[in-house]
Length: 135
Image (cartoon, rainbow, N blue to C red):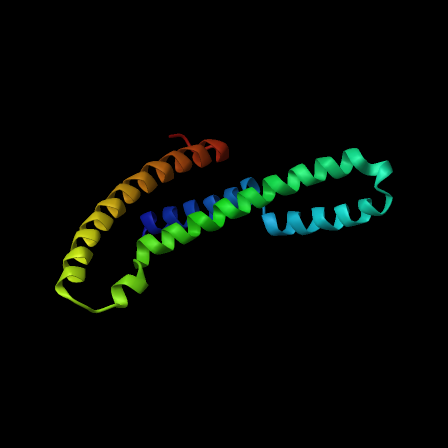
């Protein structure tokens, strides 16, 4: 294994560890908060403040979870294309429309790839700074 591959492997491991620390599993935290909420609702009057706090936190976590899945869906769509549209074979009009959409999609892919490169560079610099690697 070359030095570059070793560095890449080390970087990947550091990014994975950083991601697990920074973005905890929302599903586990949501389940825990739902359990707490169920217990507190048995004595509603005594726990109104805590119930309100937990509801707010649950809403925030559900929003984060929704955002995560939207991003995953968008990435998969950009990688694979819209299979329903591409699987339909048909007239010349649809073929021309698909060619135009493919060109647009390819432009979007290029823009997305550039965005990912800039985000990953900034993330790598941030993770490197957190673990003591000079930039």
